[in-house]
Image (cartoon, rainbow over all chains, first blue to last red; front, top):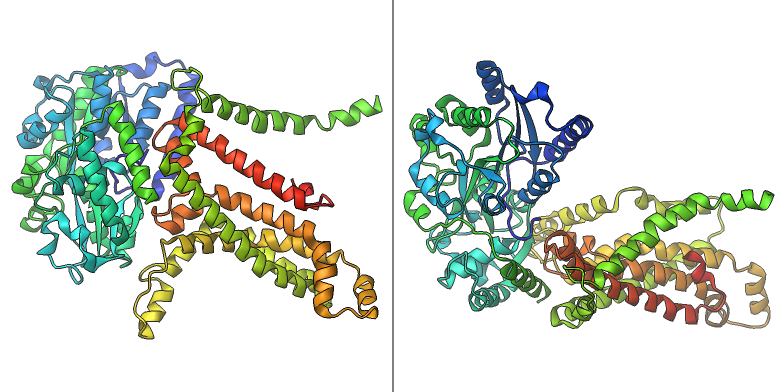
Length: 365
Length: 274
């Protein structure tokens, strides 16, 4: 399901392959063998994560130090994770996914509490990010932040001046007719409109959402296309001047074309947090907590940061970074930007249906 | 005994029909007429009257018809030229028209995106020539173009086939009796190729009406066809009931268009395709 959110990971083409391989290698033995295989209970850990979102070296280090055998499973979208997870053919021990999906799973009673008092490195994590996570995990007892980022504008400074992208209004600027790319997902594309009107991005008020829709309908003639996965590549190819993207996608685009720049407008935006949680299906809570604690450790977190290149909440890693990386605002949004950004909350069923309808209305205009 | 054996040969196909045609249609009908809780309802069928859905089905009809007309205008003269060629490698020329179909159509459509994009190949040439970039991609016209590109062979082949069936004797006889070229075309060739035209129209119009991939890839998410609405309901909105309801309505449109075509198709050539 890409309609509502598009939390793009850096994983690109190989994801499908990895996934297919993972499906083959793992669902088969799992469906043949009984779920609670005594031989693997004590010293193995099944990890479910986004594709290419964890450095293999970290896993090997963890295996060597603890003797726990780690099996990594990967997925592409939170909805796919949900389907895999709910299918129940594999008992996952520890899972990483996005904020709103964790909220959904917590509300469904699928998540175990994590006892952070067993952790040695939990203090490495930025308290601000833990605080921001409270929107989906109010007591900070179900989840542990892993990476985070923002939603903003990826732009070509040769065409759009950096002054202009300080506000979402630039996405409505007639001068950029046919060179604005929006996200092909309701909630992402609604963020600029809601913020321009001064509404909360989590609003479930039908009037406010309709107001945002009107604004987006007015914007449609200017929009070049509503894209999802292609956005970064289209920007790199120079097919548009601006695009609404997640910071991860922006970092990927900048890697391919260093002329591009990224900005989070002043009106505020969405902050996304990918976090780890321990599901009810976990067979060994102690090992799962050991694994999460290990991920907080400076050296492991550093390896993962260098592999993924998203904003890390690990303060020890940040302290070791060179000045240039630390001040890269695409990766680490400055605190005044973060102050205006909010994490998405899962919509209720009624609002979900309403948004689905508003989306069709926008597209049919 | 022998007859029974012969009938058994149809077995695999019957299993195929039951499993992959009748069962899925039954499931779609079930979803279309029930709510999420399983209660009976007409709401998902009636949902077609919603302004958003009306708009998208009208757009689908409009683009589908445009595509069919363009295909017909391109294919008919072409089929005539092809069938009037009298050289040894005639079948090779026909083969050339089928050749693109060997490549996955998604890839071919995707390559059009590279050609038509804002900084694509055509625009790069235009800028070089001083005409400035022109908006080529992500318009309804582009979607029609993509459909024509994809479905043209389905129009050419049936018309070409019906033309090759016309015997030279008939044309010669007409000439002997003093008919001019136009008369021959109007009174002989056209009536004898009607069945081919009908097959061509059905084979182009039906997929164009129900298409959603081409409008997605060449429309940049800005062209919402009824196929896209259905896809959204299934894949993203997770409202399978509404998606099925709209699918049933679309099926009615398809059946109706085929019924209309069958009225014109006197010798049943069109129906033979299906």
